[in-house]
Image (cartoon, rainbow, N blue to C red; front, side, top):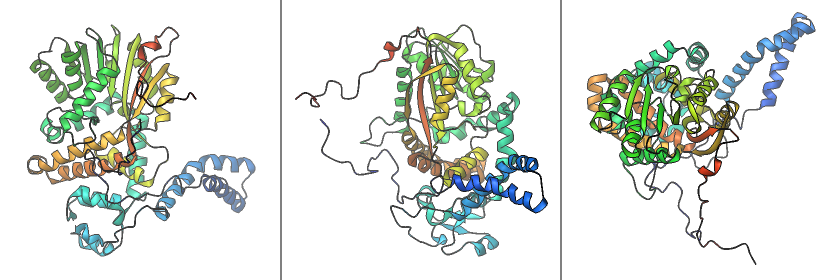
Length: 476
């Protein structure tokens, strides 16, 4: 029977509880009708002023639609900041309560209750022109009291000059350069927040009544993935974008699989193969250092997993990637896709965070899209989606543990990698705890198989929630 007790919001010790709940302006306040009107009116005004023909008007409308739309979005981001129907009031503390601005010119611009564009804050913080007065996570929980999220010139420049070209290219060389610059920085850099498991993907909360350790969260996830794809002894298992190879060795050790992991990271490959030896599964677990496009396709695989790598495949290459997965998978095989994504009902903070991540943390990960887009790509390439889970809040808990580890290792990181790299990851982790918790960005667990008539769908049936419980009857 359902419990009569009602749990207080954000009371679980598993998660960092918010101290200020605010909504940001975005899709809800943005008028598509006004946008369409501007797209039509601007070229009409030019036609009227310069006497252009009807054909020229049509051409101008097509050419100016994207620039007009972009300028409209930029202007709206500066004008509309936060909706009026907020749950709580702002503390209205001066910006000096949250940070010390060291640069004189910047201090003259932002003081008292003047709010700073978020992009300006993190760039100047990384440059050393700003110091925080306390813990970054606590200060970011109250970010709406000192910051707002407009599309600035630098954000727009990065989007046009770097993000879009990277989206359009996604060559092997580009992907190799981005991955190796990022993941070959040093295993100790990542161990400083990932801990012993060296798993750079969302863990899963198993017991929300207590604060599980990072290792427990990741062990929960490793076990969950293997159970979801029904791994069995002797299964040929492929993990695309395997990172440091923990899932590869875990599956081989605990489920008896023949597991292969593929990564572009040289350090990751060496670490993963060393771990396989340490765990005694070097004959059944192996990491290959190569582009996913060069993965050995035969013999076919019974189980293919891909945890938070597909974002880096890119929007333009995504269907090609899924077709490759389908080609490598047995007809009765299972494909597990864990992929980070953004919500469709966007807010301007989502844009600000997403482009910050693209610039500093995950370059080239442009296929972080809403769930409906991912499902549509799977179905278009011949997959049937068996199940989908949204685990963004689990990611928030994982990031909370990463942030805790990172702050504990501050001195060693600053000593070897410098204050700037420490600060970049400090802001990434602190901000992302909140972003994942509030749904700006999330993560999806998707289980899929080939959409064939002969596939035995009954093999994937699980018991309904509450099955066997004395929960009442519909009979009179």
